[in-house]
Amino acid sequence: MTRFFVLLLICTCIVVFYLNKVFIANTIHFGRTVMWNTYGYGGETRTIFQDPTIYLRQNVRTHVGDISFLEFREELYKKYGYTLTSPTYPFVTVVSNYQMNCTWEFTDWLQVQKNRTNRRPRAYLPDGGQRDFLTNKYSGKYSDDRAKLNITYKSWENIADIVTWHARDVLRLVDDMSGISMHYAMKNYYLTGKRGLVLASDHPIVEVQAIQNGASHILSVGQVARETEDVSSMSFLEFAEKRRRYSEAFDFVATWGTIESVGLGRYGDVLDAFGDLQMMAMLGCSLKKGGLFFLGIPMGRDAVIFNQKRIYGHARLPMLIAGYEWIGTFSEDFETSTEITGPEIDRLHKFDHLKRTLVLRKL
Image 1: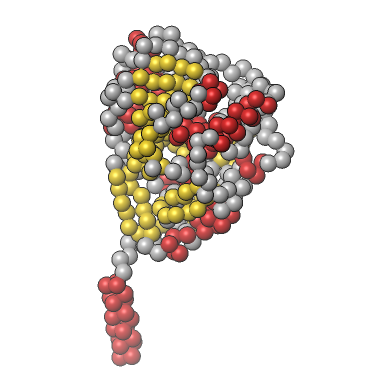
Image 2 (image 1 turned 180 degrees about the horizontal axis):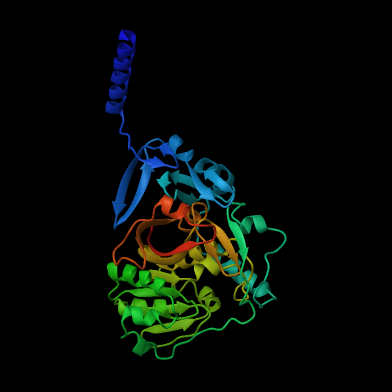
């Protein structure tokens, strides 16, 4: 019995000594105790592990099972030309190894558009290259081509009147209240007198929201033409051809429900596994250094809902926002920035997702 108490005393001393040397956050993550520090800016809280080795071995949930960030680094980011620079959780921070010059991105896109022959919406992924569309296997796949042949574009001719409506009344026109997160994000950042670029969707909600929050003028580029005193528009083809005129010309960029479908052929566009990443780069070329990017996307386990959209998770999201500082996250439930957690993402079932507006600052 005496030996037992002596041994217990020794063990207690060792534990106390160790606790005085390191800080242990008594938090369970996937059944393991992890060490971390947190930092926040503008309401967005992210986590940096004190020991990167411990962090990289942590698992996150994907469609092919629980995968470590170490595997992501070796099998995903290195393959596609990215370097993992900071062990932030729940999404790592990566940078592209390619030095963006805002010339190749546009010339390559223009060449592809010039050579394309098929302008009908696509029903199937190509037999070859599916691995790239699925983020080197880490994204799930689900086919959704129900509207592939009857896409209709909505155009509102009375935008000048609509901007006087309440923000929630505007969203009732498209029966999607999750878009209020874009309004909240813009409301929290000073847009008065600023010029913005919007990647157009089927409806000009983002343009209306920007004007409601004080933007002086919006250039809308995409499929849908819309013109008012405060909003001008052009096709993306014309915008790409005039790229030098718009180089670092805008105070902010905004898009909701568009980036995730680029390259999936939903509107007859060219199939491109990296279309969303290239589009982010091209839009970024028109944004001033330090300018804001309001990015509305679906978040969950990485997936491709073909030909509708991508869902961004632990694997692909870091590549999408490479080159930006993530400073805020907005949902339809709160008017101020909130954080999005790993467990919140991981407990979503398969192709379920959350719609969020991320606020990014161009580095």
